[in-house]
Image (cartoon, rainbow, N blue to C red; front, side, top):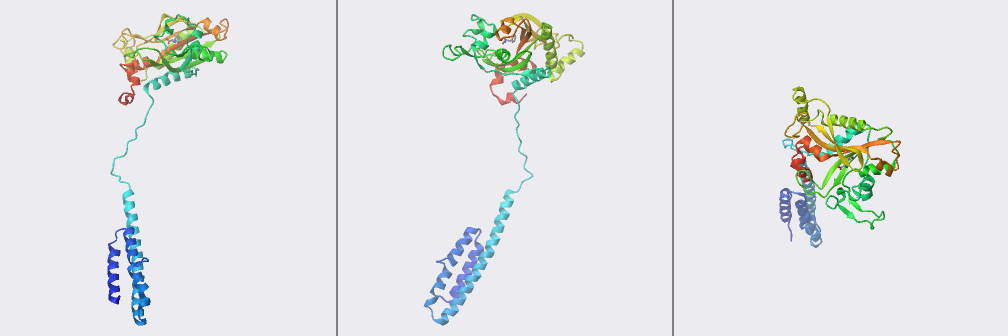
Length: 367
Ligand code: PHE
């Protein structure tokens, strides 16, 4: 039989357990142990019926009082522990302002994209619109419509990636990876009437074995102007203005050119030089050199001769105008195409074209 002393003892033990509980789960275990359905104090209260009336009064009162006391002890401790837990969580979550900040690394345009943007921006300033065409192209647009005969060396298996032979495609034509951006000329002219003033940046592909100056994938920027009365003089003037803006006096390397001019060691004069050349789709055609931006034209390590070859150009061949449905008696035009990698290599001193496409961030980050 339980005595009053037993019950008081029980309460002392329970109180100690309440104080010792360091978290809410432990505290709940104490509650279950004493006050749960099968708890120690609950059991005492359940056996009251077996006692004599006097005993029942004494033990009953004591046990009930202790149950109430323990309940309020547990509630108090519960509040205390919750407060502690919140405080702990806040302390853990608070910001340590002595820690160094996290650096955010921002990406930026690849050098090739930067140079393409620089080139197109200059022509946009001259009133040109940007045009694009597919990289996988029909033979017709890449060669035939550009007055390039079937026996032209550019069409050989050594130069061109052939995707499909004629007869498979509904257009009944060979499909190639375009070898230049010039097919965009045909696509644009076929889709609109003159006047045409477009610039067409994009990828081109040739079956070249990679070496420091060759890559089977590379970029070009094509230009085309067709209007009434366009002359070779317009072509020269346009390219001269482009070269002044592009290779003038902006970047670090370009400052060298200005200093060379000012020091009198560089020749002044036109920015560009034209040499006769042949392209099937222009007549006459020329290869265009720009005055070396590093030495100003006297000759240096970068250019050798004082001039840098950067583009091909010419007057649109009348056969091409007829092919797209234009009348060569009414309109004339010029076209040019430049290699983006070559320009980027010259301007930024990149020694090997393969570096552009190796995806080494140590290279890409520099520009
Ligand atoms: N498409 C020529 C090439 O890739 C360049 C060019 C374009 C020449 C336009 C004349 C006119 O070499």
